[in-house]
Length: 235
Image (tube, rainbow, N blue to C red; front, top):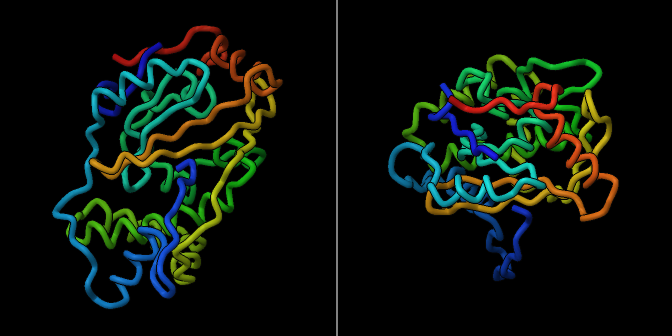
């Protein structure tokens, strides 16, 4: 097993406390209200792209789970072998191409299987827009955040349309189905854990032990990202 990172190679919905009547119940809602009021919280400077060593070690210990870390703007920062096999080996991509927001709206896409063949591509795009709106509120002085939003608004009519809707809360995604070109359909449980100290997320795709989907993930672990049985390693 090898945890890959951008530097080395070149929620599950949590329990929310009930908010008092009329008060926001999520960071996205709270940040959006700050934006509307002109008092967006400035959490000082740039969003973080460095991943804690303990999280990198954790990725290596999850051979039956596709696990990866994303930044506040959906850049894939670190990933394990099963993620490379299920989705893509990000070590083969330029840094800009590792951004899931950019890939969701700007491609490249396969017409028969857009965005890794996931079943909830439309819902994911809506989620991306809402999270980027919140990230822009948290990092108003970060040129990377503002630049990504501007790029997507300019180059993707769909992103621009969703941005204007100003939705700030999405339904949680509990399961997701991938249509994989080698092993076919596989449905996974989705968990996203907030790494609050760096404003990152640890995303976990797993399947119940003994299920057909768990067997398919195990097969992917053998087949690897290149479909040839050997997983490429980071350099």
